[in-house]
Length: 95
Length: 259
Image 1: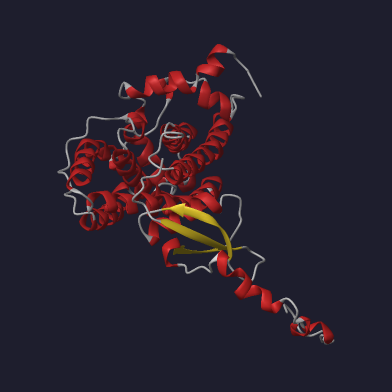
Image 2: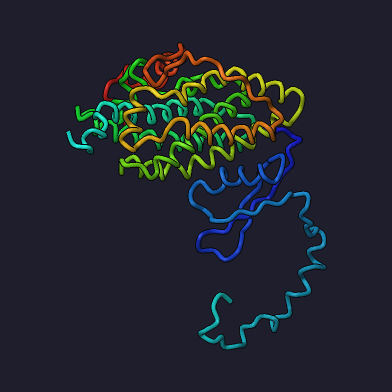
């Protein structure tokens, strides 16, 4: 359907109650402006968000699944990195 | 006769004015819906369908109001599905066939830019009901203008072929824009009542907006022609009858059908 020369964009939406933009999917568009309009039409039809980011998929650098062991395994046995040993004060929100 | 009574429009003028707004949105929405499943990309399919739904939503609010003004117990559905072409008061421009994608977007820009100025003025008009509807429709229309203007610029300032096709579409559709600004008795009565804006004021702002888009799109503005169309008076091109035949088929074949 979509012309193959339309590049792919990744879409990030911030919901009304959300604090950060979350990845929701991807779409095709010729440029960033069109990608924003498409994202509005495709991903916010049911009031999903109040802000949209789009980025060309080709501009996103991703880790290689083959590197997963080297990247992520070393963290597995370092439980002390989780801040679960601290009492969190009431006043601290959104931690 | 008091001053306020002198400036109040006849109920018939108000009804016809509201029907013009309603039918223009309804018929354009129906036209755009023809693209569903046929647009050049899935994303555009949804984009056009969204605009169609906005327009049909506007038409519903306006037709409900028209039904109340009429006071004959008809509903919005009866007005949409059981009137014949001569009773439809939409602008002739909106019933013109979709043609290719570029032509559809040229038509959309010409109409949406007009609705934008109209709703902007109606938002603060003397008719509270109309003002409410205009305020809601205005937000939708701002997006319609943005969407259609982006495409007209992209195609006009695109390849030699896309440029030629949208220029052709513009040349063919331009003669229908005369009707947008041709004030008749109904318009004059509504202007006098402090409801409708002056056509000349709307035209000046519409023209400036269209010129800015055409310049960016490297398209040339066609010369204005003598306007022979009067869709808002119920005199239509042959295209409307075919549209209504399809749109009204179900209610005509199975009166009162619901689901």
